[in-house]
Length: 228
Ligand code: NI
Ligand code: MN
Image (tube, rainbow, N blue to C red; front, top):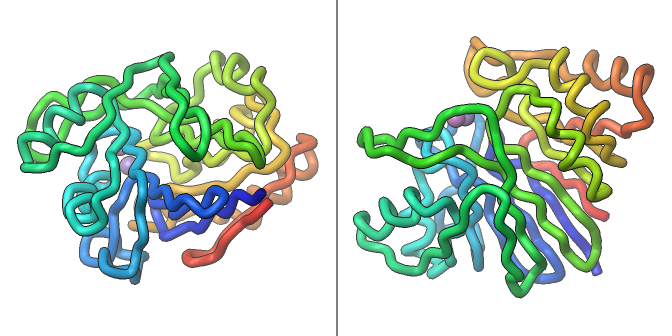
């Protein structure tokens, strides 16, 4: 059993969960300044969509049409994807969970917004907890710090993938506080260094995380993976 998390830059991740390919928030070459992966190079059986913003959904429909992947999102985004001419979706909503072949997925709250690129209402933003045989991983999506992260952490997280870039989401200081609520074994920072307003020194952040928590920070370079 294994769970492999590959960072494609910004908040796009390619997962291999016991052989099933899951992509989080596809924003690829041409739309994501730090990603050099084209749609044709990315396998996908499922796409998990945290919210509707363009820096997360720019390549979702094209990747789905190319691969046939099922897109898992909130109800409003699923409806929008139907209107883009793609039917293989799975709608959920905040607090709900569903058993997929690779594991149970629970949609969590996020403190953010979720408008779609054409102005369509995108429902509430969210995150996902993936309960796989090999472990439990939380993808918070874009979010501010909120104290109910303690409830998310109560399930026992192996890995938490959180934004740290500031400006659009929580920054390094709030991300450190988030880890004190989430208490994962491992934390992977993301949503930074894509553009100038979210440039951050994550190596410095990792030093503070080691000093102040029991969490192991794993600072990936774009294209690198963490596997457990
Ligand atoms: Ni966003
Ligand atoms: Mn974003």
